[in-house]
Image 1 (cartoon, rainbow, N blue to C red):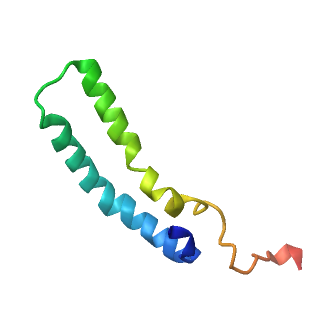
Image 2 (tube, rainbow, N blue to C red):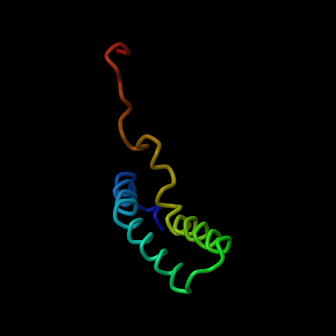
Image 3 (cartoon, one colour):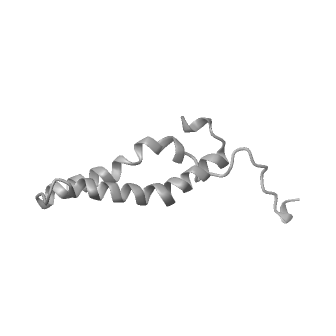
Length: 82
């Protein structure tokens, strides 16, 4: 789904997900985890770890490759390489 977006669009959407989506998800996850009352500490730990990992699976394609240089950009030529 996200692979059809351009490199720059994927970088922008990844930033939106991290800056806006993550705080919203953290609030929803904490409300969900506390909705059932206080559980045993080990069970609570497992719930928080599962919710902490689960958010990335829908966005795997969005974050894939955004840490690498833009494949469509022109290569950088330094002055000493001319």
